[in-house]
Amino acid sequence: MKGVMAVTEDTYGGEAVKRLLNLLKEKGIVREEVNVDSHSVGGKGNVVSTKTAKIVQTSLAKGFHMVLILVDSDREKPEDVRRRVLEFLGGKQGIDLERVRVVVFSPYIERLLAPDADDPISHLNAQWGYKNEYKKSDLPKLISRVDLNAVRRLPCFQELVDALNDP
Image 1 (cartoon, rainbow, N blue to C red):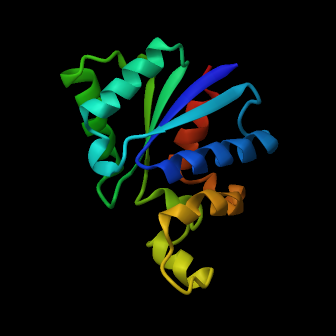
Image 2 (cartoon, rainbow, N blue to C red):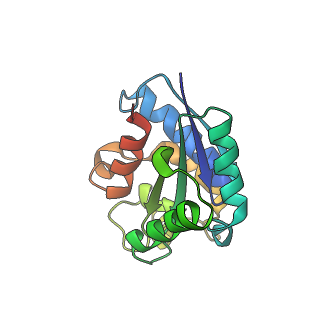
């Protein structure tokens, strides 16, 4: 069994990642022995924080094979977001980054639900006819609608699958 701790911005992201992993296992995209647990940092502003550092350190000490930090780019360059997270953890916090991976969803994790849309959230509102606005709390139940053929070309999806399948 390969244990992966997914560190997410919010609790909805964690539940969505667990459901996505089950879908990826069912389709044979991720190996069956991969098991994901999740921990929320309570918002994007907390991703680069001592809270995240403690979650990473504790997870590695508990024997998780990998810590996977999942974050939205919020229209920043994904490489800038990734670099900022890794520099903080590795530099300021002194964490060995060998078993830490950062996957940046550009612009948001909802990109997985609308891979061709420039603004995935607006697309969700229009396509799926939300009477009110899409809410992040909808993410876990919608993640099963991911078109795996369409998302395979997204760098964030490729990074996620590669990280989960990393020996």
